[in-house]
Image 1 (cartoon, helix red, strand yellow):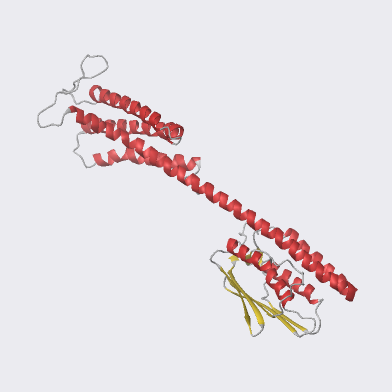
Image 2 (image 1 turned 180 degrees about the horizontal axis):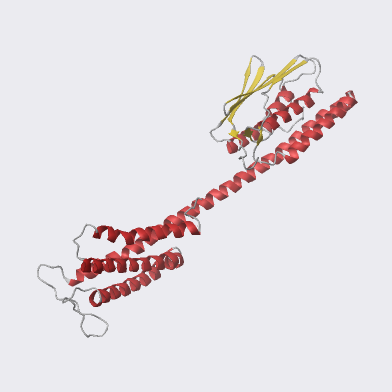
Length: 371
């Protein structure tokens, strides 16, 4: 079971581990010290007391002061409260040192209320105020660490929120692009069927039946992030056969797709339709011979789609289609396959060539318990 730091359990476990190691460290040091049991025990208690003070300062800042004052840029209040807290800890630390942890015969606590007398300065020894400054600086460490930890956590939260916003924006853009694809595809198909109604009613009926099957795929399957490559190939074959119904003997139509039985490879739905639509829209002439070829090859996880058609650009008076197909496809590829796709269109020897390369994702295979 994985426990992430950004969860409550993860934070508790991490903090507990750090404090456990800090409390364990003096024990490890004592293993290499002289075997003076009484002195070692006194030093261990002293270290643990100091760690307890560090923990109090750290968590007062971490759980309250930093969030309420430091992050709200109320630095003066934050500074004053910490100064009072550190002074209180220094007084308590001095009291405990002189009353509880002083070595026998060296106590200097006198009956002057709750404030002990400082020991007289000795020649060759730093003045007593040096130890107060040292104690103050050492107690500042947990405050600084608390600020650093809180700042890092706040940065991670901001980064996570930014990533979540980016993911939401990405999903919204992809959803909008899907909504553009389906009406675009549907209207183009209706135009084809409309042209068949006047010339061949049986073909029009066959086209409507094929369109109903494809619309079920559009409605129920393409809402997923990815679909099986086998499903997508069956769909584009149905679409090509639908478009084929309105072609004459002057159009040579050839397609070659791999036979994929299992849903081993996954890809985003409806990536090939804009290229196939484009080929029929710009590759067929009513009076001249036309040629359209489609091929898909799969090598490992790499897919290559090639569409070749005679180049008959539409005139301005032709209003079929909305012209959003290729631009829509490029946007989807940038969002779904950043750095893992290549789309190129060229004209060679009066033939329009569209090439799309992308990396497929492997389908998750069910475990033995799910079979």
